[in-house]
Amino acid sequence: MNTKLGKYFLVLPILSLLVACAQMDQLATQNADNMKIVQNAKTYSDHDNLANHYDNLAKEMVAKVEEKKISLEDYDDHSYYYGRQGQDFKSHTLANIRYYEEAAQEALQQANFHRKIAAELLKREYANKPAETPGQRGNHKIKAKLNSDSSELSESAVKTQ
Image (cartoon, rainbow, N blue to C red; front, side, top):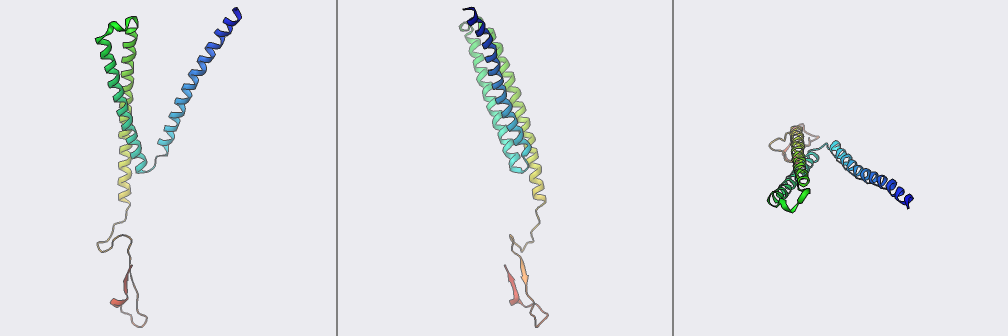
């Protein structure tokens, strides 16, 4: 009987460690994927999409803050339901509110950063475009043929593509 109890106490910490590592690995993988996306962003649309992603993330964090504030109000209104664990619940909820507020701020900063980069890329894209002449639309070019007999250009020989 004593050996079973010993095995239980040996296996329990090992399983706890494996579970903790598995969760950290998932978060590390997600962060690595996000970093690859950010590092590979090179065009206006890439940075614009990233700005929209961070805006949505900030909105989600703000929604979670509101949800936690409602839970906190419920605790304040009905603290007698929570018993001894009420103070733990309150401090945990306050910590979650701070975390989500910081995450929302960081997401907004990232969104603004990528929005600025997208604006700069868009400016450069417009600056590098060649100017069109008033009579020329699109890629149409004006070509003229010279008559081999004459050195003058006749109207019938001028063609527009």
